[in-house]
Length: 141
Image (cartoon, rainbow, N blue to C red; front, side, top):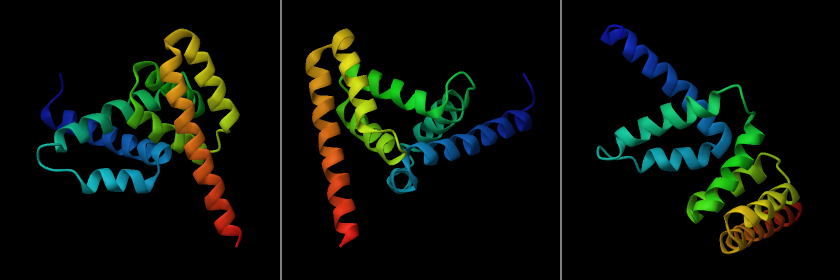
């Protein structure tokens, strides 16, 4: 293993890449809120997820961000993680993934992971689409 300086440089580089991906996927507002709520207790976890999930996994060349978004929605649906699912559905819509595509992922997930979880995913998707539609109408006024 390299010296502490090399290790630290690698961690900082992974954090920078991770923060760029995290902001690109979830949006600046969400990331800024997360960072504002960070405490000395949660700081290490925030660094860990930024480097590992966002700096390593989301940076890998095997899947593009659109594919990773859809896969994430399927997995969060399957495990019933509704808070994270809502966040990722909304982030995908903001990034231009259409509701029909997300709906197909939820339908597919229903067969393999359970109808109740996908049913809740559809409720979250519908609420996000309704809010987006209302915001667009308000912007037109």
